[in-house]
Length: 202
Ligand code: SAH
Image (cartoon, rainbow, N blue to C red; front, side, top):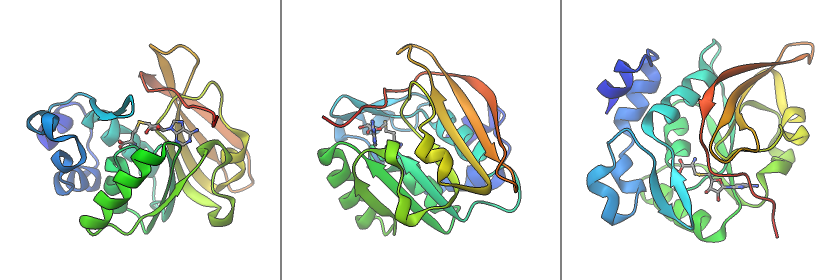
């Protein structure tokens, strides 16, 4: 799988190493295990998906492409916990929020069994995690109609956020939001993507 991703221009050695280390097949339902290393998204239950390896690698490198590397990262949309595990291979502390109880519980059990020490919370990621803020990096793995202001607030000076934005379920824009040392925000469109929607709590 790392070779496939390398072939698609991910050159960040640390990210490639992290992706080689995390056993992706243990994050997908049993019936999909044989296809876990294909470069495609797969169903993980509750109508959600694990992102394709290329997108995980791309977002992870976009988050930490500049030195110094992120130390504390917030993920919105834990899903099966795969992206959280990849991040845990690279940064000091990972915080991840999932809206669906069932997915959060399964991810927690799985990550614990694999020895990952990740802070997990069930709730609306749109509010961020104020008590643990600020974050050097924020990664959102569901598509929001616009960038949640709480997440921008919780980004540290010099921090980077990668987030798919757009209301079209078929195509959104992956944005890189950066906050400079003075708190100035800039946004850059990276590439068109297709993510499951960011949902509001009922
Ligand atoms: N990073 C995940 C991708 C999961 S898909 C992985 O590696 O598997 C996106 C996830 O975002 C889904 O599990 C969905 O339930 C969750 N989600 C959707 N809206 C959310 C919200 N408002 N807050 C937190 N999680 C949300």
